[in-house]
Image (tube, rainbow, N blue to C red; front, side, top):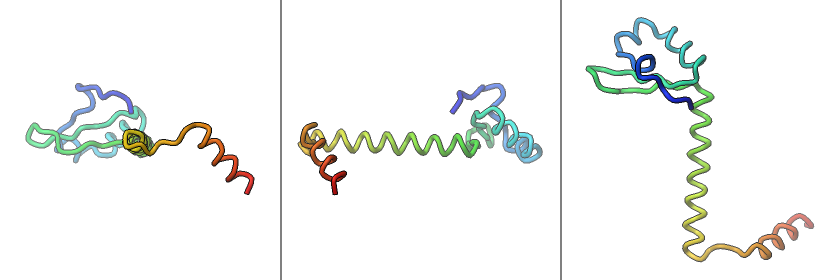
Length: 93
């Protein structure tokens, strides 16, 4: 996801309501998020669908890494040779 530009990517709800189509186009073309404010406070973020999916994939990968690190810390790791043996054994079957 690209970095947002404060002067272009933060808009009030009233402006979003009247120009939703142009804001959707902006988000799609720039791949930057759009922060929507209400009474001067951020209430929502509009993202391009592909950027949202990429963000979810990154989160899933980070969760997998955290799980793996926790497993290693708890002694649940497998030595390289043993892992290699298991993989080769499963391929042979």
